[in-house]
Each structure stands twice: as C-alpha cells, then as structure tokens.
Amino acid sequence: MTLIELMVAIALVAIIMAIGVPSYRYITYSSRIAGEINSLLGDLQFARSEAAKEGVPVTVCASTDGTSCSGSAAWSSGWIVFVDNSTAGTAVPGNAVVDSGDTVLRKYPSIAAFDSFLASNSAAAFTFNRDGFLINQTADPVTLTLKPVNGTDTKWTRCLAVAMIGRMTVQRSGTGACA
Image 1 (tube, rainbow, N blue to C red):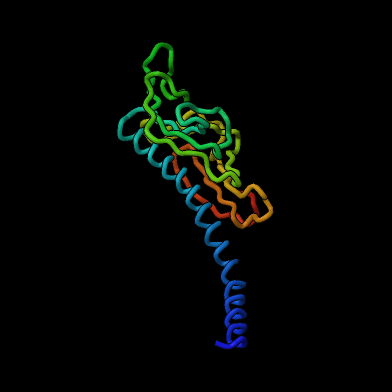
Image 2: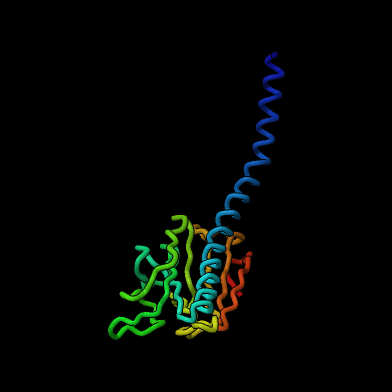
C-alpha cells in the first residue's frame, strides 16, 4: 500500500464519519427520549388496567427512593406504581401516598441526568379509579414534558398528555412547548 492510497482511504473515512456522526446523534437522542417517555406511558397504562382489573385505586407517582412518593412534579427522579387501597387506620384509598396497606407494583429509576421531565400543574401523582378515570386532578389534561436539559435543541421535546378520562397521548414538539 502506498502513501497516496493510505491518504485516500483516510480521506474517505473522514468523509463517511462527517456524514454518519450527526445521524448517529439523532438516532441515540431520539431512541433515549422515546424510551423514557414510553416507559412512563407504559406504566400509566399498566396502572389504569390494574385499577380496572382489580377494582381498586392504583397510583403512579414521582419517587426519589422507589418506596414512597416524593410529592414533587419532577418525574426525572423516577416513579413508582402502587395499589393505593389503604385499609390501615385513617388512610384514605386513592390518597396518592404509600401507606402501610399499599403494595408497590413497579419501580422506575431516575432517567438520564441530562434530561428534564416535568408535569404541568405540578402534578406529582396520577391515581386511576376502578373505571379507569383519573381522580384527584384539577387540570384536564395534565401534560408531562420531557426534553434535554440544555433546552436549546427543541426538536427532541416529547409531551405526554393524560386526560381525566384516562386517555393518554404522546406528542412530538418541534418548538419545545406542548399544545
């Protein structure tokens, strides 16, 4: 192999890398964001179906430790799904608090440290009743917005809207804000 052939090969590799790296970045960002939003969507759908199947309130709430609700609308720290059917003492079923009689069904750890996942209307929990409807919500719908922390590249923003009737939709926002 001559020096000229080696230089041509290096130039071709550089051109291919210049074309391929931005595409790889798009694929990794898109895949990560879609995975995170779909994980919460899946857990919300699971909670709704469990509430309907078992006939008891089931709650999904933001959680920092995987055993209790954090009371914060920052879903980036993770979340839990639990049967919210307390019968202990004065605990009220569907109160969005993990009481002694409640069972945690699923735990989701914190998402990527460089992503922001916040709920509109400071919603820290979603509780579904036996009919699959949300209870204890004041806004309709509640929108959870997932975007990279840098906030400059809005094409990655995804929004999950949860309506009072239990319907959930995911939107892709090119502006960084959800409709």
